[in-house]
Image (cartoon, rainbow, N blue to C red):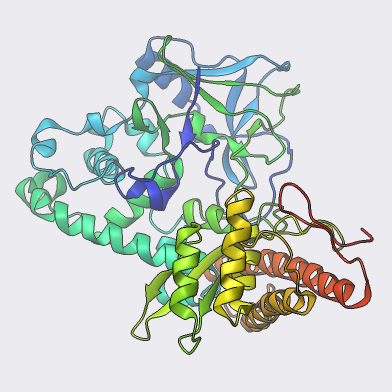
Length: 481
């Protein structure tokens, strides 16, 4: 039994080179709010969907679920009582759509540089072009149309400008660039079969790629769209996921709790920050406990020990990279919310604090001492407090200053967004502004928690004669706390 995991767009889009196992993620439509339980409103337009799919599969897919509508779009509801541990759906692999569904005459025209998301996007575009002649017409007609998705790759330049402080801004730009490259790579093939693909535009292709990236699962069989299963919405507290049974050749979901008739049935995406949710699915959560922030630090060009520090960091696997014309050494770190202002600082990566300690060194001897300490212990550089307390405070004040600067930028960005109730913006822009607000607010909360912890740590070092102690794991905590 294997998890059928949802794709993480940017990594998987680049031809699955960096794909890693991830928990299930399902597209939650048009919402920046958490999913709540609601009564069933049957989707009469989809009455024939499940009978059609079961006839195509030659097997029963679900006897306990029905398609309905909620505040979050098309959803699945319990049509009868569901017990914990009960199989609620089983979709045979034979009715899952994969890149293998490409018509042979199209497949033969595509080069090896075209990735699986692009191939599956072409499948969707071809089937949509065929309309009612498509064998997948009932499913294709249920997929979001142009303008109905809010993944950040579909945002305009001005809309992306709302979130330029966040790392998702650059990820969206990179993903747009990759999709554009793929479009021009397949364009000659599209023109060779004008009756099916000749009038497909870059906008069409972008939408199809966003659609596939937000709905497709990856398993040992590759990338696939699983009809009916992708109508399930998300609950971060759910333990239900999609499983792929390779022996039985089915994808299945097991209920993690009891459901009464009319209740919406939900599954869990995974532990993803808002940055991932909006990049891949086009929605955010008002409060996401998994939010995180990427911050960058540089070794100044005028640091006389710059090259020695770069080499020391390189030897101990805290990699730096050279960027821009000024040849500044830059390192990115991901911080998470620090839950206790006086605890261990869990959420601040040890590598970040090590980097700051290296920055404070002003002599080759200090760098040599750090290298010797790492060799004598577990090989990790500067993971223990510096013996010079003023240097230890200085290192953390460097972090505090940088985080304070970033917080000011986030606060300014949030203030620049239009009020939620503004009637001067269209519905789509208003929704994207709310998504941006959720993202920036969540990342600001993470930054504030780090700032509070760092302030407390530095204050404790200034006032206590026994402010910190060393532990075998190389971590340390303030005392008291």
